[in-house]
Length: 228
Image 1 (cartoon, rainbow, N blue to C red):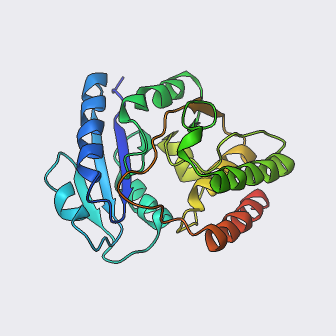
Image 2 (image 1 turned 90 degrees about the vertical axis):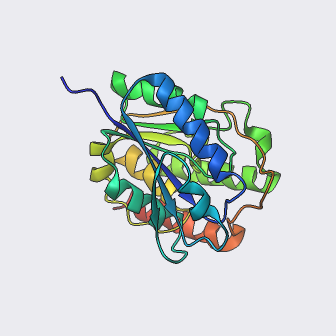
């Protein structure tokens, strides 16, 4: 039986101060697993040196040319991924690549989608109170519609089986893609599991998430994905 290949997809937009360390740490974590892997960085039209720095490391670097959105960048990475398992991790240094094994192990034991939850682990304090409240509201709406309780519907640190990801028919181009993955995964009967993760506060940049406009998009996505 052929050994699984793991593809780690890293969407990046103006993260020149952290992208190098994220790629390097991800390489180290994956090499320790002794499983074939690839790292795909999708530069989403950065105006700083993100793309140039990323090319110095062991990774395939793709470019959107201009800023298209996190969802657009992730889907581009998914299209190029060769792995049976796909991991997504943010480029801002908030996540710890050495926790990737905790996310992928359940996939070998009947789970289809694994989401790293900041609120099951020590990562809760890494987000602002406003973002925590927003996440709580989104989680409550998702529970009301799907009947299933999720603690962190907005996490960007996840692992999936590629065959499952292909069946979700993702449409989102912005931050709402994480919500779409969560809701469609729950509604379509895939085995969804959360695992606790650590999460660090941003040290070098501010979040690109725009609370009001992106929040509205997330709400719309919840309902659209639920009734799709």
